[in-house]
Amino acid sequence: MSLIEEIMDFNHKFVSAGEYEQFFTDKYPEKNLAIVSCMDARILDLLPRALGLKNGDAKVIRNAGALITHPWGSVMRSLLVAVFEMNVHEIMVIGHNDCGMQALHVPDMLDRMRSRGITNECIETLENAGIDFYKWLTDFDQVEDAITYSVNMIRKHPLMLPEIKVHGLVIDPITGQLTVVINGDENAIV
Ligand SMILES: [Zn+2]
Image (spheres, rainbow, N blue to C red):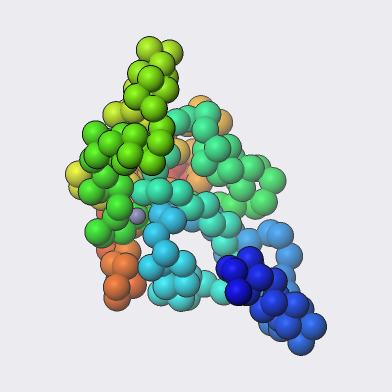
């Protein structure tokens, strides 16, 4: 059975049995919270469990590395929608130890693209057109530095309200233990 067949099969049983009832909520996050975190599969379920969050509590945006790299990119847009349309009052950027983006080596990834059939000509054309792969693929050395960068991107955004609390945290992808890097209660401008 292919993955899509397996998932559709499970889904049919899930809906028929009414299992969705335990997830009933509305679109406004009950804890007035938005989270930016990493796409790492180890924290798919661990992150909300370790934070004590249930369905309906928070808006969650995930990407590779929990990074906000552009003030007008999709993560920042989502956060602004969360604040102005969804009653979000607090934002948590939650990175994690042992992140794939820490180990990302851009020349190796470009080599992997070439070995999978992306031509060197294509890569060079993109570079000549102004795509800086080193900047765009955004690896980082220290997760705390990446979190601080993203928190500052949010706090300094011209459309972000100063009273919104912005926190930065690291989660251990094995134990779920949280460490506070930036406590937004201390730096919020109320
Ligand atoms: Zn990660």
